[in-house]
Amino acid sequence: MLRAALSLLAFFGLVPQAGQACETVLFDGARFTICEIDMAQDDLRLFLRDSDGTILGNFARVENSLPAGSHLGVAMNAGMFHDDRGPVGLYVEEGQQEMRLITSDGPGNFGLLPNGVFCIQDGRALVMESRRFEAEAPQCRFATQSGPMLVIDGELHPRFLADSDSLNVRNGVGVDETGRRVVLAISDEAVNFHHFARLFRDRLGLPNALFFDGRVSRLYAPSIGRADLGFPVGPIIGTVVDGTAGGS
Image (cartoon, rainbow, N blue to C red; front, top):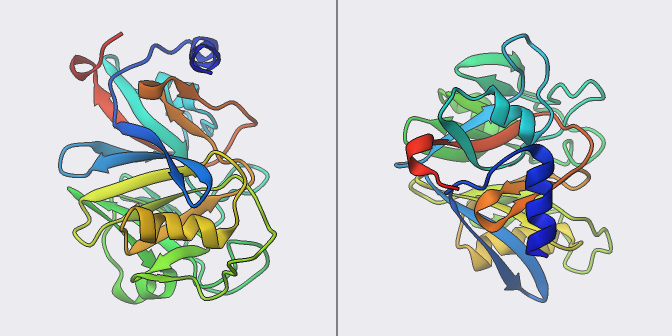
């Protein structure tokens, strides 16, 4: 398994670097990979386009877009996107808004209200229900909207069913009460929403969590020899590691 993962890194032309703490955990009979991020120390960002305005779409292009001496520490796809890979809902990068907030209900997972916003501020992050986000209007250096919310102030999304047979590989993000601890998580096998949400609340102890996707879920974590392949995506979340912190 590790050899296969390292071969994917070689395919991308990437060298494993020191990064955030990622591990595989077993929760309620299913395997998940989780990556812990400390907002007081780690440089967490969102990525969509290169300097020419072309959507990056994969981890290798994000890596190549970084300044010399910097590397991706950990990354995953970060929200739903249209056929042109533009974000479906709110998207903010370096304080510049590309797509507006959407608060109406609608088809698909994104429109399964309540949905939410993941917002990166200086030294902290938050996951907030979209209509509350609209009312409070927090300032975000980066932000991505997705849905549905998985955990809302310690409660599971009201539409989730424990016995649902809607199973997918899923990924998402959770944040603690302080905004300092952020966890990126991906299921390593197909699970339903209820199971995935309980991972954040019951296993990770996070009061707020947001679903990113269940159709194109992918993780880049060179610290554990993982770089998932697949068709290009839209928004990507990742940490940037200074070259002096990495190693081959």
